[in-house]
Structure formats: structure tokens, C-alpha cells
Image (cartoon, rainbow, N blue to C red; front, top):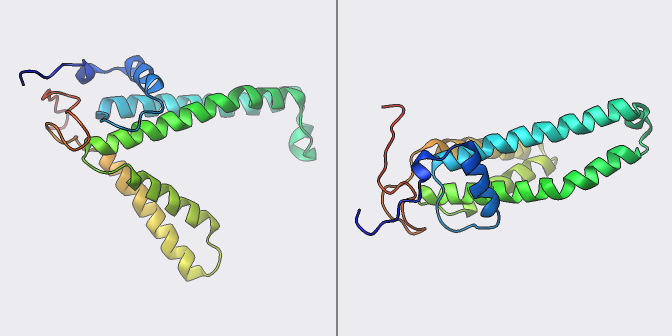
Length: 175
């Protein structure tokens, strides 16, 4: 492994993964190891839960009638305006790290796009029950396949998307 720079990714923890993904939020090239992907995904879920809790609590505290009347509460609107750009930033960063995770398995990032397309088609498919069932099945199958791929170890050594982020380091948890 002479000439390969060790980036320290093999010991990537929660905060290191969040910092790396925040710094590479629009980087769709290269590879992301499992630790980077899953730590950032945990941060994504925690942030999403916090945003939902903030919106729900602000509606409950400031004016419960907003939910029933359809009117916009100023505090809720301000919260959404403040959190909107953050949500977009984190969503793009999540797409970016997922594409890099697919690259670590030597797969194109367009597989993620296909999964999103199938999910969108499932949401809009109301023509016939048969077509809806097939699209829903394909959407669920694509999501499960994507989940499984993100769990698998990346390709060892360089692949068409770059150098191995682990540089030959192996910490087999399940073996």
C-alpha cells in the first residue's frame, strides 16, 4: 500500500462524518465508506426529527387553531423560513453521500436517481390498480436493494470512482 495516503476514515466517528459530509455536500465524485454514510444518515434522521418536533411544538405552543383553519402562524412561518435552507442543504448532502456510497460499491449514482424516480412514480400512479401495484413493488424493491447495497463493504482497492477510502484497513464486525 505504498504511496496511498491514509485519510483516517477507517476510524470515522459521528462528528467527523458530519463534518466531512457538510464539507463535501455537493461532491458527487469519489467514495464514501460505510462509517461516513451511516453516521451522517443518523445525523440526518436526528435533524429531521428535531425539525418535525420544532414545527409541531411551535404549532402547539403558539396556536393550535392553525392546524384546523389553514391560516399561517407567523412563528411557524418564521421557523420554516429559517429551517428551509438548512433542510435543503442537508438533503443535498444526503444525496451526495449516498452517491459516494454507491461509488464505493463500484455502482453508478444514477441508481439512486432510479430509486427516487420509482418512488415518485408510485406516488403519482393512480391509473389502474395493476400498474400501481407493479410500480409500488418496484419502488419498494429498489429501496430495499439500495439499503442492502449501503450495508455491504465497499470494493477493495481502487475502482473507477477513486481510491479505496479505507486504504486496505479492515474491521470486520460480523465475521
